[in-house]
Length: 256
Length: 379
Image (cartoon, rainbow over all chains, first blue to last red; front, side, top):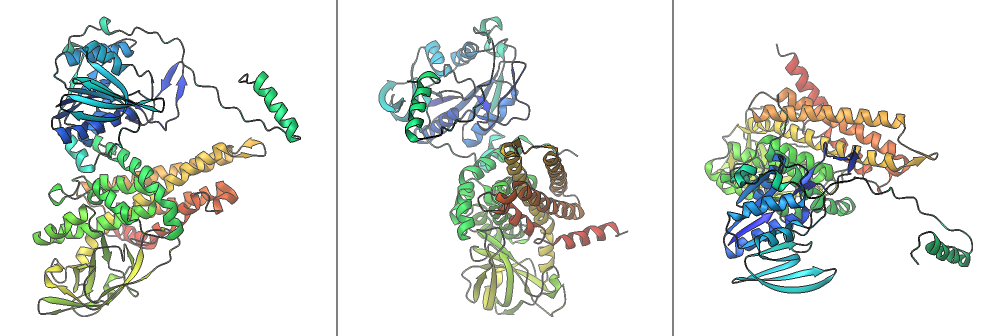
């Protein structure tokens, strides 16, 4: 079984985001594997250990993303690919899709796993976009995956409810929180990861033209959510407070 | 001198940090309240290779360098200095001597179990009348047939009562000499070996410190470590590593205290103003600068140790300065928290209590100054 995992390097979820001149400042920030992609890596390793085969992790990003690939290798993935997208202007989900499409054109795969969404951009588009381009079936938001022969039974999270879908392979499945508990990369694993193959590919290697992978979207503005205001404490008799609260909810907050 | 971490070290730091936050932090309240040893954590740490960081893979270690091991102690101590010292004693003085001085048979028998965390290690040198002065050791080991009979007692033994193996130092000749001290690997079930009372410590709650008693304890001859008379050399060989480990522990405590203080003053309002005025900022600046200096000394010493270069003086300097910094920084952190800092509702009082011991064990600050002074006046 050839399993590929799509992985993105993202800000540590604990980092405070700062914006300067419309750009996100990442000086000194800690970076991690996108947590949803980490579920995908763990699932891939478990599937491989049960059914045999190989796990390859793939990322689109800059050379710094090698660290996250190495972490996935330390967890137990077999090999890694880093697709460098620095030459692409104004890259967006479309650009990533084009690069991955070109990458997978040359590969044989039974299962492609990825995170349901990345915690930075939050678009959740890459999985479905890629499946569409490769003309394979996809299931998003998986909380359980069972493989039987050439079929995958996927339990997916639908806004708190569960839906069970059977698909035939090859398929692309994205991971939701609850799918598994990712392992820590063990220290011997970290040492072994150093020796595992990691291939870096650029646009030429994939035979992709810069212009063809240029982003289709334009970022107009970036801003932080407004700072949370201090709450208001109502005073006086309970009855008066209730009336005041109802009035505020109607006229101020306009939620009633 | 390059103190830039390698990719592996960065990955490891991240892993240990995550592990400490997810698995260790939640144990801390219970360790503080009950002083109970977190045995199940040892197993978990063993599974991810934390119990044998600097030991080679052929003995089930993680095959990483000494600096990586120091990083692990440093990160772990930010969350729990108690787990930091459990790990430090287990590795640098509980396991390393067997790996360095053991016969192949001893190594095969003990090191993999220790490195995997199936066994916990301890080190028993200190006695009621012999602390920094190891030559005053009174515990005796008399050879009888193919066994050594041990008699005497030890105090302040970290991991005491929890450890599976103890490196025990005893005299195989006349009192008062340094040349007839020998080291033994003593297993916990040895007849005549008893664990004494557990100390009620000011800090490091959850890590065990006990006395040990030997009453005609018979230790098989094959458990003699090195040759008779090698004891002091064995004890001294890991001193530098141990001291750098405590420097890393002190560093972790200090950094954790600074983080707490920083976030507190950013939220705290005083007289209608945020508490982050210049006076407070200056305090934080001093704390951070001391920490940075302690960090450089510690990783510099670790770097020398990794390269096999002389590190005795630097290890003592790192230990002396980092422990002093931890004491200073935690004192300031408690002060910045005001009344709250004196309560167990906030973690800075724990950091304050934990910091103190760094100035005492693995050679007091006075001993470190003695070592540094001697090195300066050697020529």
